[in-house]
Amino acid sequence: MTTFEMFYLSLERFFPPLQQIVREKLLEIEKAQPSRMDILDVGGRFSNYTIGLSSNINVTDVPRVSEVQHQLHLGHPEGAEQILMRRRSNITSVTCDDMVHSKLADNSYDCVVAIEVLEHVAEDSAFLAQVRRVLRPGQSFLMTTPNGEFVENRNPDHKRHYSRQQLSELLQAHFEDVHVEYGVRHSKNYMRSLRSWSLKRPMETLVTMGSGFLAKLESKDAKVSGMSWGTHQLIAVSTKAARRAMAVGEKTMQQSGGD
Image (cartoon, rainbow, N blue to C red; front, top):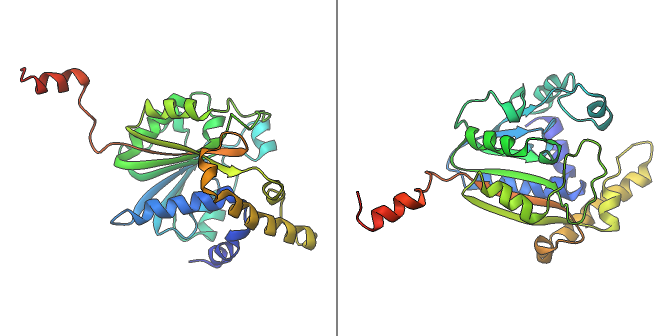
């Protein structure tokens, strides 16, 4: 583990709650695997939530080319690969790839992660079809996106915000097992936790760090996963079946003893 990774993990409990929640879910997925995983992080840029995982991480993103991407720090920034390979011990590759038209190999990953990505994608169904294609049978896709039932879409690069029902139906068109819940409770602590840290503002930074810790505690309340109002994210885990279920007609024919 690198010095950067150890420093990051020592401060993790003070970061905004979404980063902590995603890492916890990835650790749960990793724990259920019998061997070292291959994880594809789509749009992760610096992939901080995969720090410390005992997995091989491939970070992929579209190139940063448009003015909006530059303004909002979206896409693959120049020099990102060198920074990641220097800072991280579990990053195996950094790839420029458009997931809607991905050139990655079929059935090549044990987990695909897309944190706050799908809302930026115009062709969301095509994106999910490609995620399914590169995912190995029986493995999971973890994603988050803004909760459209609470978070108003004011981002110039967001194509849409989803309701829980809309996201569930979209994922169910591509995956056999889908679970979508609400996450990250709205509070003053949460809003303060989003501020940047700076050594030039030590007192403000300490308040921001403390707010991240408290916001995570607030989001751990069991009621949050069912709260459509007052939560900022939808968090989904979808699984590609080990083998596709038989078509209804085929199954009915077999049950009736038909040829």
